[in-house]
Length: 490
Image (cartoon, rainbow, N blue to C red; front, side, top):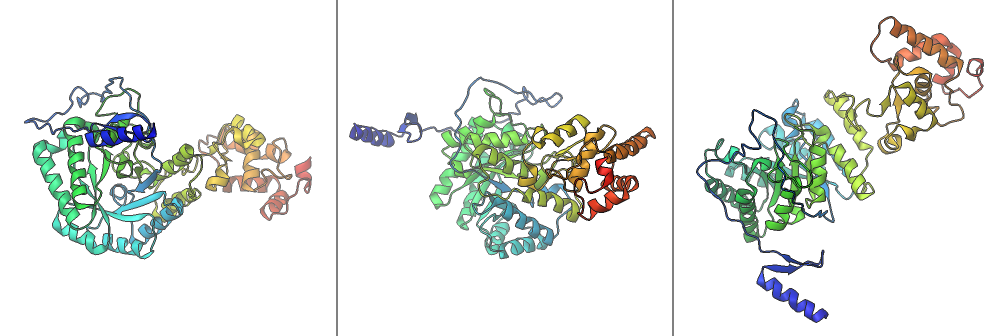
């Protein structure tokens, strides 16, 4: 039986129409080939993208199988796409953030690569500083223009991989570059072959893939680039760029907007291995994290991110979000140091001067802060009731309560116990303690007088001092024990 099975596999392999899959143990069609569909005028998918209305989501009710790769990872574009939306980083800031990326990704390099500009002297000094650290991960890669000068520059810096733009929607091919599809394909293949001649791995950015003719241009281009890589013995990577954030994950959604369809098609029809497929999304429609996770699920090994999701318009996929998503999908952190997420947030705010919206998940000042008194009461009884996971253990960020007009006795008690590190100890102050009532009376007076902002830690400390100077002294100097002061026990 096994010999017969082997013969079938050999026959089918030489036939190039069916192969026996070791993964599914099924006979599967393998010889897909899509011809370039050139045309005189662009296909702008006006039924979907009419511009004067919200883009529409088409459905054909066809589904493709999940195909999570054995290995998945993140790459970074903070210093390329991300930096285009902020004040330029200094060389020292780039180097420090690169070190934090290395710490976050851990020994397995789950933050696998980081891409840099190399146009200016400052860009090149940043590259050299990061290369001098000798880290295996993240690998330093570049992003360049299609010019011989840039190819030579990348080679001279010792960079082994570079990104190059290969815009694939007719919006870009016809309306921006003034080319036909045939002219664009020939141009792109020529540029990539020039890069290959320098011995550099090309990473081809399929810009605007969610508005592109997938069967008429994307697949023929991917096949042509894959063939060029085979000729030179150097793999060509495909970065599927959802430039405008149009990608959707709904079951049965049709191309060009279907993220599962795009990834499955590149892998199954164009024959691009998962390790050479990368997803790069934007957040124009609030879908950037879900789209990136879906790309993993359907066969892309890599998702491209930026720290805090910085990037043009609505930004890129947040690196910290995908680190958490990795742990959710894999069941462990893969050796990552997730507490570095908090370090990244603090560095951006304190050293770079970047203003993180306070409700931003994982890094915002208020992401695990509650204001409602009933929620604070729950936190006092069991922190799991209103905290997403052990944020203190994993991120170095204990759950906390912001004191305002809605916090109540429970909120003030929680603030006291959190601020003075009494939570979970025998010395924790009960919400019924007289000191809590005294502070609440002062807080209520503030809001009765017209205040509409939350109380700061310094203000609450002053209220504690005014209400009970001895207790404030003991708490501040770590001398407080439950029952050690009369005011706490009354």
